[in-house]
Image: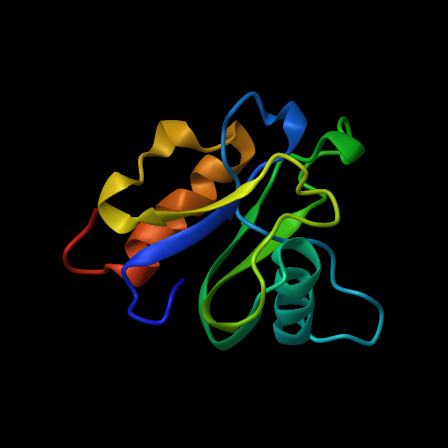
Amino acid sequence: VNQDKQQLLLGRKKEDNGLWRFFGGHVDVGETADAAARREASEECGASVDGLMYLGTTPIEDWRYSGIGDSIFTIFYAAFYQFGHIEGADDIDGGVKWFSYESLKEEMFVPEHQILFQLFKTGMFPINKL
């Protein structure tokens, strides 16, 4: 989320067929979920973030673990952009882009991140939903 809280940064992979996703990854051994969120923001888009706000936890379908059931749980945070040169990195090879809150629609997200969009809407805007 940008500092004036009016835009959200999203990324995509080349194989995402033009759809967008939130940044994320795994928590390393010995690492807290908060620290992992900060590290992943830096690794995937070059952003230094702060002010993490927990939005929820939900199972996510992950192709790497298909057939195992609900083995992946996403701990979902909003984080506020502080500084950094924004560009796609790591596995975000299809670009990054800032979106105004008003322009966000569920169908613009990869299917496995649509539930995260719902958490974002209810967590960031508990009274006035998008």
